[in-house]
Length: 295
Image (cartoon, rainbow, N blue to C red; front, side, top):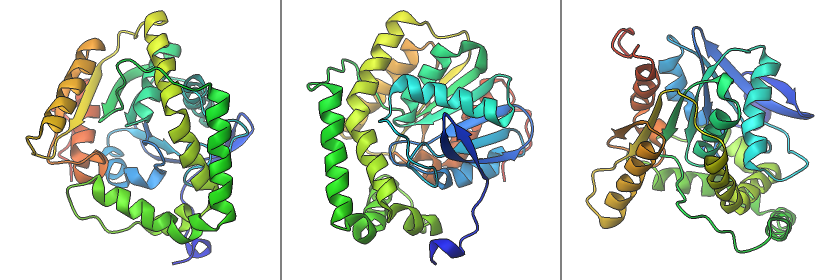
């Protein structure tokens, strides 16, 4: 199915001059979902469907990803945390929100909690990224310039159009334990140079965002809000997998939060066991036991 035949869900909201694609569903207390590196709004479809009866669910595409326009500058941690706050302002949501971050976006939602404590009602990290001692080797400007050049060369060669959707499918298969059909927007979005550039820049700035968070942890305390670290577990007993769970548990302890397993699940927890994400959100405020059963 071609992109011009697909109905566009949600709407576009201009934040800091950049049109961001955002989908809002449901009613009740506010919950924001933010995906990992290169992810799009549709990666949360199953979670949003289960969560919307209990929460007002906001999911959005960061600049360049999904259907959002590109930003003029590469991402930084503070800018991504501020983007969440300004997006909620633009949507008219002034009250506190539970923020849910997957993978790289775990950095963003933790930074949001630390930089905007009055706006945060709770935090859920879904197999969030962890860097215990980040030390970027190159100046940020050098690495981002190199990344921009790589993205430009890929686009000039037409590779995003040819390989983008297939690469996205390979990542999805490697990051899940279940079988999930391709989403119609995978081909429409991941064949564009815009999305390819955003993915390359997010990857290039990852170590700098990790270093920014390490500095923020020293200077800005976490607010007194409930935190859950939800770690993916695929059932394997390899040393690498068990070490990853130990690191996730240590992160929960560092943040004064609760540790929980999502199983059986690969890194894309929201695809394999969306109900685990929903329960983590509802249980933050003790409403999980009282809410209606999940469909």
